[in-house]
Image 1 (cartoon, rainbow, N blue to C red):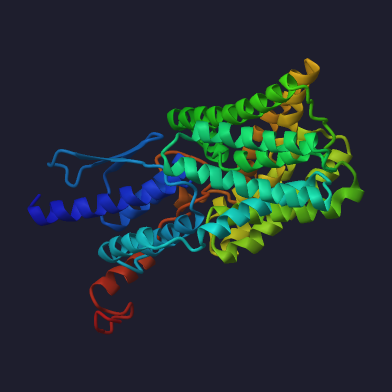
Image 2 (cartoon, helix red, strand yellow):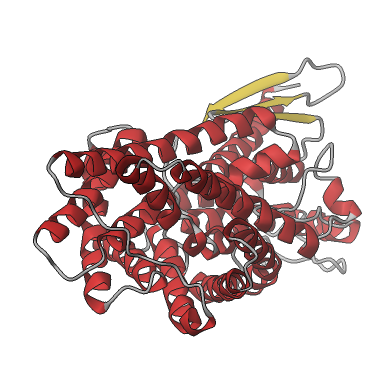
Length: 460
């Protein structure tokens, strides 16, 4: 293999690794990373490619010719935070590249432009979106106007605190502890000052705000599709961050008990059909707010709100029918997975963006708080069961949306060719390889000719 071929292989592999880094750091499963990376290498003419993914690294082994030894390339995946705008742009780039609309050189330059472009929303708007999330939780928990307003302000304070700690490179675990402790102390202050609000609603809103950034869907997807190493790392991260939230709330509750103040548990979730209108509005606000904090495209907000409304409607109806919190949330998540696949395609965003945002309102913030309250205040063993229910709800949400995608997106033969084994539905990345006709058209464009054989300039 001469130097020109080596450089071409490196350019293709480098592009594939950078694409895989964006997809993985955005919370997508390893199967989605595999499909996206393989689409890029196929478009670059590489056939004998092996990809190995772990939570922190991507490794590609390429054998460009039978007589040439394989070459191995490794890239470390640095966590950038959830950026659904960046993920959407990269997903479109991979699809255009795999169908021959652009070549690898243009794709590499465009990827550089996408990654260096400023965020679509200013930082103050992201903080306001965090407040919108908390306000939506206040509505879901039947809070008053004053409760909703205080939840909004508290969430903005938490977001500013997390940003300050992030700039100082303090690990996410301590950020979750500090955020949970702050919201619990705010609730204690309101209770001591005898402000006519429900402190438990404020705490539950803060818990959901902190839980929303944990990529549980990707962890469960990896476990279901057989990427157990990556699934173990992601699941451990999810458990660690959730443990930080529990630790922060526990510290706040314990401090209040030591000072002689015990917060009352007065919040309640929607459990009757009369609560449905407020639940629908609250669920939509929570999901849209979360999507904005993740820089999702504006066009994605409508399908996200629709998915959230669907989830809340199903959840309230099933809870009213006494199906149980975990089973109701799982059933709602299945329908969200089915609906999101169609909505995401119509609005040209990856299904992952709609799915994760759509189920945020179902996260068990109040259940976690109830469990900690019973354990620390009442010394009631029922607190363990409440925390177990919260864990069941989380797993049910993640596995439910994936089951919905299995129903909505059956794999075709072309999709199977993207991978060496069946790995589940695509939440990010191309669903199929280009057909022979599409590949012929692509070769014609690269040769400067129209598909019908007429010559044209390279600019056309």
